Amino acid sequence: MLYPETFDVIVVGGGHAGTEAALAAARMGSKTLLLTHNIETLGQMSCNPSIGGIGKGHLVKEVDALGGAMGIATDEGGIQFRILNSSKGPAVRATRAQADRILYKAAIRRRLENQPNLWLFQQAVDDLVVEGDRVVGAVTQVGITFRSRTVVLTAGTFLDGKIHVGLNNYAAGRAGDPPAVSLSARLKELKLPQARLKTGTPPRIDGRSIDFSKCTEQPGDGMPGGVGNEVPVFSFMGNADMHPHQVPCWITHTNERTHEIIRSGFDRSPMFTGKIEGVGPRYCPSVEDKINRFADKDSHQIFLEPEGLTTNEYYPNGISTSLPFDIQYALVRSMPGLENAHILRPGYAIEYDYFDPRSLKSSFETRQINGLFFAGQINGTTGYEEAAAQGLFAGINAALQCRGEAAWLPRRDEAYLGVLVDDLITKGVTEPYRMFTSRAEFRLQLREDNADMRLTETGRKLGLVDDARWDAFSRKRDAVSRETERLKSIWVSPKNLPAAESERVLGKAIEHEYNLADLLRRPDVSYESLMSLDGGRFVSSDVSRETSEGRVVIEQVEIAAKYSGYIDRQKDEVERAAHYENLRLPAELDYLQVSALSIEARQKLHKHRPETLGQASRISGITPAAISLLLIHLKRGK
Ligand code: FAD
Image (cartoon, rainbow, N blue to C red):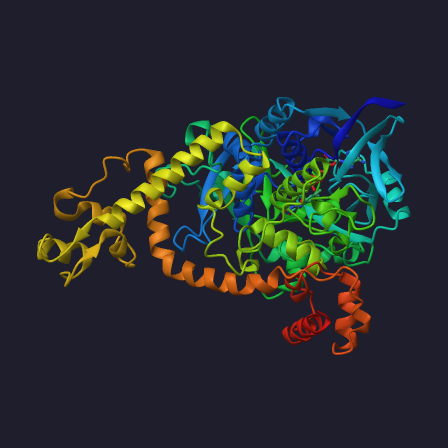
């Protein structure tokens, strides 16, 4: 049956990529259809019930700054929040939250169901409709054809998914969900370059069978015994009142016996016996991989994380495994507090198809099939946050294509999203890709705290940001700039500031005139200390530490002042690099004929066909020398 209506954008898959893609396209005014296996699993967390962390939290803030759902849904579903690296510089500070899976899913679903221009439909997609070199729709399992101008595919771990527990395996998209086999076969038929990856998850434990008295409690920030007295917030539109009840996590450890048990299962491990071919995430290894690789370590920390407020289920973070169930049972019970643990769900590994992201354009549209975009785990990444950011990006670009406008391509110095997209399309992946702050060369300016300052204005122009967010953002931006100007306009000198006061706050008496903004740049001078100068006569009537808005403004003023020197230097670097970064390479350039380049460089450039010189410079094996030779070749050609 041909569905009577035509859509601008069809999004296939209701995971973290698909939901952000569908919401973004619909916010931008595209008539959008989200087709997914099961409406009950919209926004489902396949693995750990947590959002954020270093690099990942930065992505969530960026998605949020562009009007996305992940940050605010985490505020509504988060049962423990922490700021990681809180004692380090603001560039690497990151928010992490433990989420109640049910509340999180409900928050996502509520947004999807109430989003104008967005329709939901529950059905597996088995086929894509391709006419010439263009996708024009999707066909579901029961033969309904939906037509559209673009399709965003976000099938996660489902394409030809295969679950392994010991030497047993079966087809599935993740535990409890069907695989996407027909769609996988169709994509292979379309000759999109593809390979296999794997990921894994630990067994889940019934909290009633855990002896918490043998574990160490780990409270969240703002909880009794935790850091500070404020519970952190994810969304720029969020506040701590949105959070449900906060609960602690717990810590236990593996020991020598655990490791012996794990080793005794190696001969039945699908990883070590070659049953699993896909490569797994190096930074999130299975426990058998850890014991194998770090044989000299006699203990590993295991976090027992609550899965929600209305369930007894616990997620033991650190023992992801595909060992046989008898080994899982024994290894869990070998740890303190888990001697009588009841496993609710076995751990497993899953292998799935992913598509080489180097065959995507910088908009995430596939090079082979116009109008077809890929986002999320299907591009070789791992993690909810990486998926959400890509989904939002692909949703934006599908909507822009429908409007007949050029793609939106954030730069590496503008957003982690720019780093993520650029890394994927230029370097590809050899293992599941996750975000780290170390991947960003301009990380001083790509902070969590300024994600809105970097992106909300762009989001507004694209049509992603609603009036409420725009008003709140504009108020904050204006207040920061007013307060910065005010500090610049207040001058203190030996004449108008008693020496004792400047010694108290600045460490020594000032010798000539300074404005407060200059003084704030000094490492040991805080905004608070300046406001305490001389009986508090410089206190603002506008900005107050007593309100959360005021605290946010003060934080921005302070960080901008402290970092201004470094950021200015980084900006110069960015400007110098930008000239070459954005230099477009002619689409018809035949790299194989550029004789100045080595054969290897010619072949790599020929294979990847970078769109800009910047992209070319990041292809692995393309040296700075090769880039200069290419530049000379281009200049000669003019
Ligand atoms: P998914 O969340 O997988 O969503 C895919 C969606 O597409 C689902 O709604 C599905 O029903 C739908 N779908 C698929 N095919 C079709 C079709 N043909 N028709 C209709 N709908 C379809 N990440 C980490 O960061 N760390 C980890 O340790 C980790 N471990 C994991 C362990 C396991 C077992 C699994 C399954 C995942 C794990 N992940 C982990 C990955 C994390 O779950 C994903 O990165 C994230 O969910 C990817 O989001 P996505 O939107 O791309 O795909």
